[in-house]
Amino acid sequence: MGFRKYLARKTFVYAITFLFAVTLNWLLPRLMPGNPIEAMIESNLNLAPGEKEILIKFYEELYGLNEPLWRQFVNFWVRLFHGDLGYSLLYKAPVWDLIRHALPYDIAILLPAIALSWLVGNWLGAIAGKNKRYDRYMMPIFYFLASMPYFWFAMLLVYFIGVKAGWLPYQGAYDPSLLPSFSWEFIKSFISHWILPFLSLFIVMIGSWAIGMRNMIIYELEADYVRYLEALGASEKLMTRHAYRNAILPQVTGLALQLGLMVAGAIATEIVFNYPGIGILLMNAALSQDYFLLQGAFLMVVVSVLAANFVIDIVYAFIDPRVRTSYTEG
Image (cartoon, rainbow, N blue to C red):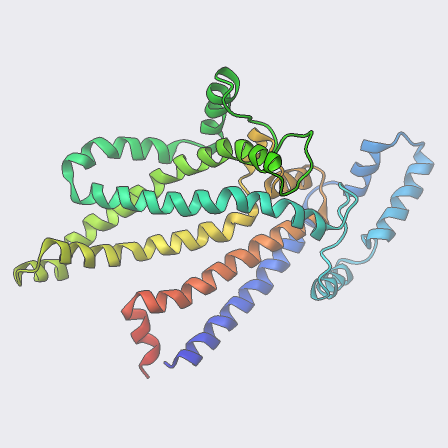
């Protein structure tokens, strides 16, 4: 199969997946019980029954929720192709503006946490897979970290470092008395508020990456090709290098998936630290049945996950010779 044919097939598969995922994403909020317009009005105003019905009808017409489902679906796709993600019922603002302001906070925490934990976790896991003595002491720690919920560790950090010791702030993304700017005072405040949420994700993630790499290294070191290299008198360094190269492939896939989910935010962590990321938006949108915000936020998740997987499918071909061979043959 030539590379172009391989690329065309992958593109077609991802396009179908995108259509299905976005359709499901549009439908699911509408299957939820209750009426978001009624919830919005009841939570903000104390109206007489007659006035309430008039207001509900007005808002349903305004947001197009009075139309049949099939027409709402068509309107959704038309707006989507024009870059319009709708208007938030809860925040009374365009969904894209809300996502655009929240996304940088998620990227600032999750990107370094995922990338650094991947590097450190794989390094520690590779050492554990080769050294039995080290493995005996480190594996319980890896399992402890992997089984520990993010929010639980986040609360420990808040209590011991934020509240008891008072070393670092534990609420918000920066000091509320400051306005976002490139001033040193704001940057210093942002970094000090960033450290605890980052650590709560970084430390817990290390356990999962280390366990995955440790198991893969052990499997690869027992594989036939390593035995063959050993029989040929190859050095331990050479055998380890080949084993590591094969063991890292599933970890690369895991990294791509994690990076794709980055735009979904870390909901539990953001709640604990009151960090203004997309996770908070998602939680509030679900609680208030804000269809448009849910659609917009999940759309970002779908696009980012599919894009990450598409890129990794291409990158895989350059990392793994077997994949490269599959599309250069035939």
